[in-house]
Image 1 (tube, one colour):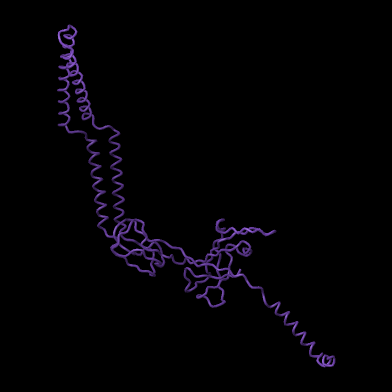
Image 2 (image 1 turned 45 degrees about the vertical axis):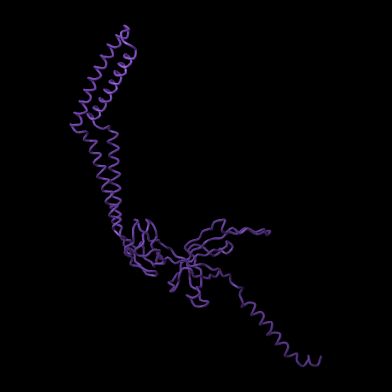
Length: 329
């Protein structure tokens, strides 16, 4: 055995050197596994809705269409709008007529009739008063019974009330409506005019236009259906608003700042193991109930989670909302 070791000793020394050199090279060439964090691609959306209730007469868009800001997407049926406009115009006419009646006052014939009624009631009152005075004197002399005296007194007081009521009506027609009544009528006219202006403006909104450039991502109604005011007809994905939302624990925020660049890979869009640059545009802490991570380990800290928004530095063809992006942190 010793003889064999002596024979192979010259070969064992180079072999040992090679083994130790290989271990040292591998130890220094293999870096620790990098931490990969996955984010989600999102976009901004705008609902396309009608400002008036009615029936959809026509639409010129479909799911997936690209639309431009100001493009006519649909048209409402004008029949319902015309009815609303006619009602509001009639309300304005009625309010103005009532105001004119209050300002002009009653006609001369009504004033003359009211005056005659007042004069007649005045004569009736005078006669009833004289009759009651005679009856009262006779009652004091015990010539008439108490019933006749009470009847005369009742007629006298009733004639007085009729005269006062006739005079009040005559004064009302003579002096016209109170200023408060005229002011209230003027307010009603203004209210009716504003309502008519609103319905007239509605008539100008029969066309539903695209609020921004983008892609139709959902459609909620078809031609011929009745829609309510504010009900979304479609949803538009705003153009050039694709961004990545990433949630990161605070212990990984060392090199993450607004404006910083992170490298990420998008399966199905970028080549395998190829990373592209994303710029951080938003950095803010998430709500406590959603991100608080308590720990009971001695000497450690509770960790918060931060939400980060990133935008690609270059245009990535095929990037869609809902895709995932892996980042090296």
